[in-house]
Length: 509
Image (cartoon, rainbow, N blue to C red; front, side, top):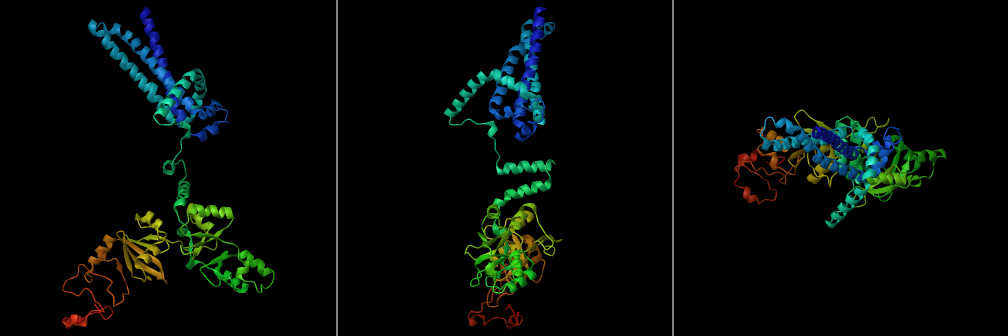
């Protein structure tokens, strides 16, 4: 009877050790999981544990060592007390059905399995799951008793931590701290994206924060107003003519260029300065150069985050952009940079302006404005066009052509065919983009064309008849493939007169 009572007492002690083990496990995961911002939020709430939790988080490494030491002690004690207690309770029952020599072994195996089950399920897995699911509430609940355990076990913690740190230093590994965890940019964006998907953060806020991280990857030339679209004034422009320019353009600020060299920007004129000058009299003798304010000059390859920082330091709203040769390339404003974060910003004077767009057509092709940044095309179309040297699609096409573009010109870039759909002087105003395979299929379906567009690098709509622009690799070898204006006239003497009569007088083919 005494042995049975002792075994029952040991079994109760085993249950207590399982619970104690679960307490330390839950404490460890709750402390690691809880957010520092939540700790600060609860500090003045008056809730149970709110005063102790900040102290725990300030000494997180020591408190985690306390939980680990507590888990170890509870686990060892459970193995020492639990298995014999269960085995002692099972032996009288098993004695009636098993031979005497096997009773102890079977009782030991069953006792070991039972204690292991309790330890893993109720001492490890369940507390861990609860702590992860409700880390803030659990951390508040366990903080005060954990403080008591910390002071109780602090001598052992000092010895064990010191020994472990000395050993890791011998291996060349410095001691790590759980409280100094930081995240890389990609990790932060991933966490932010997951929070947005679960509805914890508004989607628009997620997009804005992602754009903030992209500022250091964007260049000034991607957002600047290019020089052809800038209304600039020479420094010697009289005030009366300057007023007329302002009334017609209706902008707020105007770059002022050197009267002798339009590639050099000497400042900018604010419309307020013009109004004040007008109030002083007729403005006789006053020029744009007299009213010009200092303007910050930035290279077109500069980063947007640096430009925004410069705007804040200089308390300015506009900067002149120069190219690699120091020539005036355009202007960039605070609005241009801010729009990269918050999206398009318009006022009552912008209603007639149209943002460069990408329109998907029914046949699967894309009609893209020439001013659309290449980075945007890559994002929306899944392309991989090079962005190092060109900011816009129009610039990419113009570089590949190597001359003034004309409607109908075409270039092939990374298995995509880019057709010039519209031009504005020497600028490409719109481009039709299609996969090269689609362009090839369309050409093969036309019986009047034998050339494969995939074999063409550049197609010239108004080619010079004296030059050969396209070589058709699929053409019939019996037909004339090239016409050379400088060729020996004797070489064509044997040509069929009927074929020559049918030649196109414009191209010579």
